[in-house]
Length: 229
Image (cartoon, rainbow, N blue to C red; front, side, top):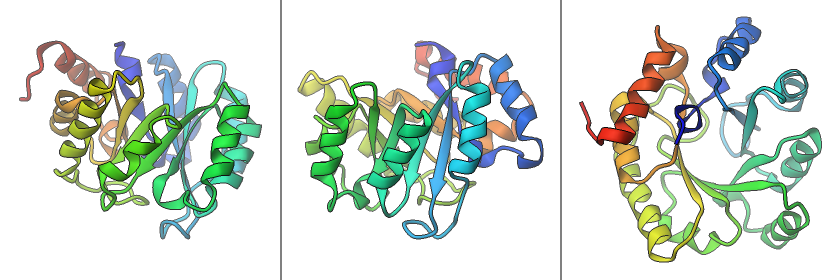
């Protein structure tokens, strides 16, 4: 696995006064994907950026970097449709919000073969509840912090969720990916990788790092040696 595929920086932690500078830096470092959080003030307390920021960023950078859109919203199907129409092709919705729209969500996924759909789930949601959605999910997004705010500490119980998903995947010869979002640093990142995670969403620890390349390299090396410093 290439290191650029392992780490996906979360733009929620970027410097909004110098967002172009941060994006240009990501492109120069050959980062393959950035994580774009959409928060509506309903499913989570805070409100983040939405379509009006996504569209100019996508238009300027989509040929150079991919966008992974994380919908922390109360009406996931409507937002899924709109962000897909804007060009997003990798979008995650929250398990806690889809009970009323699951049949429509399945129809949308079948009708759009180029969509990579993720099922995110919050710390209070049991892993066993999301597993039956494996036929719908291209990836599962384990929230290792409470959704909606950056800079939180990693919830240790998330490691067991990662391990359960990895065991379920291997036992049933499935191919979904496991992503982890929240509190990722060199130590927690290595622990997630050892439990079976494929992709790590890094926000504060990435953008506040003095040497971002060294931060990514450190996690990448852990794939080969399996050590935790």
